[in-house]
Length: 482
Ligand code: DUC
Ligand code: ZN
Ligand code: ZN
Image 1 (cartoon, rainbow, N blue to C red):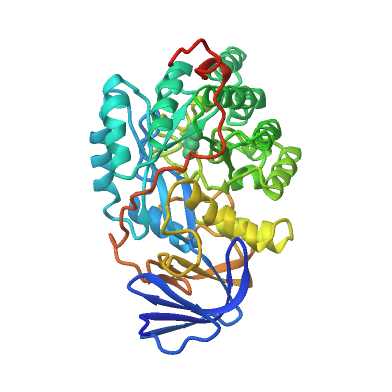
Image 2 (image 1 turned 180 degrees about the horizontal axis):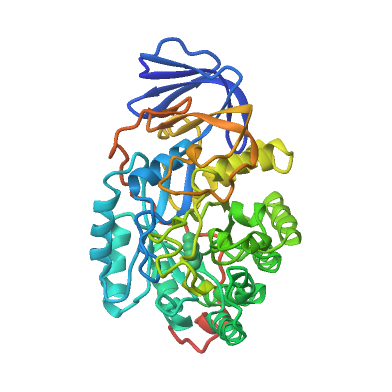
């Protein structure tokens, strides 16, 4: 067999196996896996290296305006390059609908923005305006194009669609085999806390941490799950930041609810003390939900270990520490006026590998699941997320031993800080391939702007699990078809 590329002498890892094997690649796909493969126009020596599925970043804000209209610092070029240096072969950023926009308009805007990507990509649609046209015509058109997931907000006045809006979206999603992602925080609890803090003159960045109580997340996670159960729709809870929230997710998964969730490196690595850095430095650590404490970190790690989380995602939301980003509303402003989010798309996998695999918290198999395979299965990237004959040759070759300190320069994004600066990590994604093309090798970029392709995703298979609540079951609800 003729191969374009052979990766040889590496240790190939999937969610089920760790084997010494060579991989043959033809026309961007994996066409052979064997103990020894000869040939290959290009041969990549993976001796002493781990050959893993390329990461799939399932939560990133790229070329996206925030809920208050602030454009992030990374477009699809810098965002995808940073992701590639961080061991990813594809990503699924958000395409955000702001009120009054049609979904078709949103998708064509993001198609233009994403044309620069060096990674394959899809979008999760953020829905903030679920009008009848959106629900009945525009979302079905988006599904037909292979956009099979979206995010809704339970907080932020400009985004919050209320419980009724969520039920409508969950119902449409259920009908098409799409999955709904939710930012779960109780809006009124946060507004009430904000008012009390403002009245007391407590405006420094550190007060952001207490303005969004753990209970606000826990209550909203509980409510979101109840809403999803009422219409028997799959649900994905994004950026879980609390022990209580994770425990609810775990309990529901064990009870058979079709539920998925993620946490993020910042909730595992950083604490609210980072918001109390001198001057306005704490602004760098403002994200929502906010950073918590070390007890929460321990609890979240236990949930990572025990399988509560589908993935560990970056929630890359890059606002520079200047007046284009964090301080768009001025430097000495109260915390609610500071742009909300932090970068991390390049650091996600090196962090998870080092703190997870190298420190013995998770196995290599779990790492592969949390970094790529689970996102591929959950979000319908059927050609990606594992190493098997027939799949796209999306591969990350890791040097598992080299130790380095995280620096801003290593992130290759458009940011002027990294919240993980100085963290010492072992393990480097040395070579990254997207559909067979080497895009990063030994610290050098080999990708061409725009070589990434849109990935049409498959609907979720909704057979099997799932429960019809009594009140919607025609056999026991007096025959009401609702
Ligand atoms: N939610 C996100 O997912 N990212 C940034 C800010 C937010 O509220
Ligand atoms: Zn969110
Ligand atoms: Zn986010």
